[in-house]
Length: 236
Image (tube, rainbow, N blue to C red; front, side, top):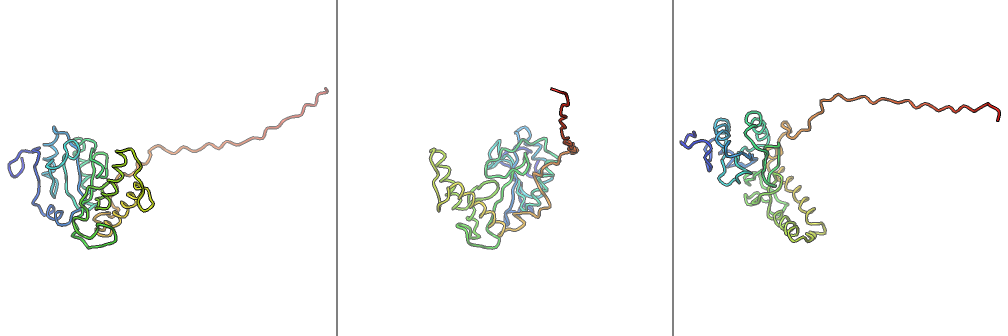
């Protein structure tokens, strides 16, 4: 049971008012989404209540069967560390992530996305990026939030797919490619504004390719032998 008396697994519960949660409210950062079956809500909720230093919520805006639990972390390194801890201790209670396109899947059962607050240093150079919270008002793609321009480009590409027509071009470049280029600019802008909070330090790597445990087989070197053709000495 939570401190407020509500039982574990109650949809709409919001765990907040901790120093770590206040830090996230003022600084933003990475948040984790978990896909969990309703029968496991209470167990996951109890574990988070006892182990999550910051804020989290059960549904209350999250989509059931997709983003059942939302865990607000902040710095990327801390996000990955906590994600690994979740997998070590309660992976059996989780489903494979069904979070939508706005999230980046960091492990098969854990997805995350970045949320900017605009309270870091200001910068200009890309449409919509001015250091204001409204600069990133849209759910983006693979963890990257969108500005106004990116949302317009995505709409143009989306409408074309629905109508089965060509998305056209933007500044002489196919719209879908232009959107991909803009996403890279957004990522670079977030890196400049938030630094290691967005990029991490590289100490915690996810989705690392597993090395094969099979010993390498030595290739057999086959020596080529010259075929000697003997001439027949018999009389014809």
